[in-house]
Image (cartoon, rainbow, N blue to C red; front, side):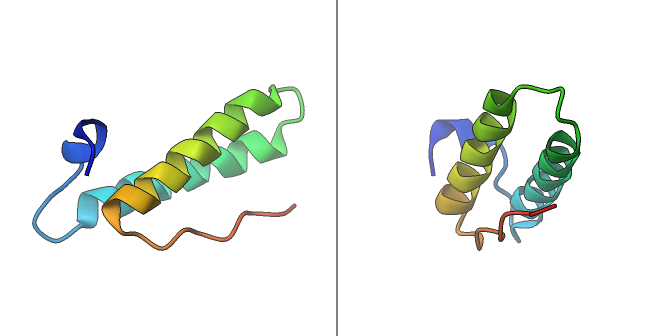
Length: 65
């Protein structure tokens, strides 16, 4: 696990899962607002992918609206 994500680790993995949940909610919000630049969503998606890879979480299916 990288130093960036080490603060998210805990005994049973709840913190990474909670972080992922909040990140997915933020991505859903960004997808609904066309006024926001796409780079924000792309960076958030990259952060989600990194979190999943480094914490051993299943990568969620991208949301399509």
